[in-house]
Length: 49
Image (tube, rainbow, N blue to C red; front, side):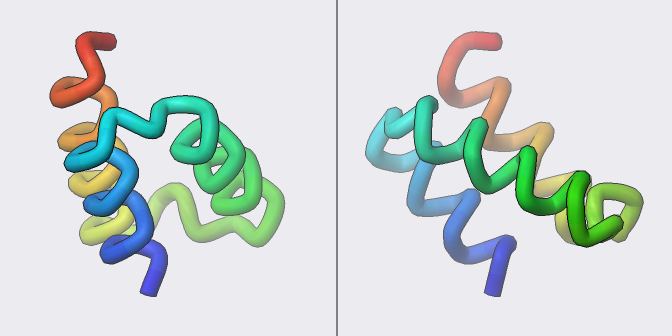
């Protein structure tokens, strides 16, 4: 589910919401998941960071 949300953030350039989702992923300790990490990398690169 989080991968889809991050993908939607990168497609819409909704960077602020993507940052909030990233914070939630850190809080629930899912940031080290391979699929989530790839989605985060994709979101940041598409948003120019």
